[in-house]
Image 1 (tube, rainbow, N blue to C red):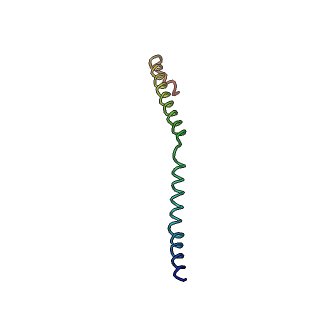
Image 2 (cartoon, helix red, strand yellow):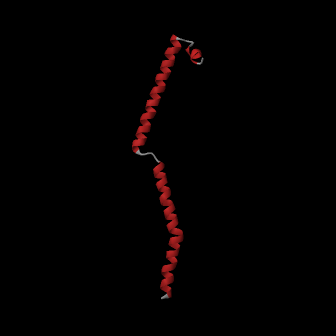
Image 3 (tube, rainbow, N blue to C red):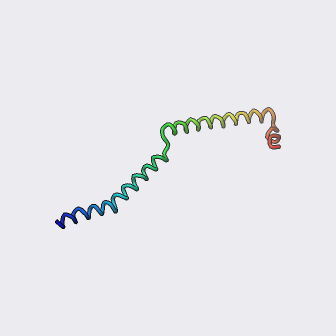
Length: 80
């Protein structure tokens, strides 16, 4: 009878002390990584916003070029 107790008790203790905490730690670490990642909708929004920002930068460059041609001293006056 005592052999059965040892045969059940030792693996149970090892599982509870080593396997279960490691398993729980790895589970929640993978959950945290998945929460930090962007979803597909968020990734699409980010790409859309990036494209809009690039178009805005092109427009600003074009407007500055027009102002440089028409009013060469506009930059100095804008700083005052």
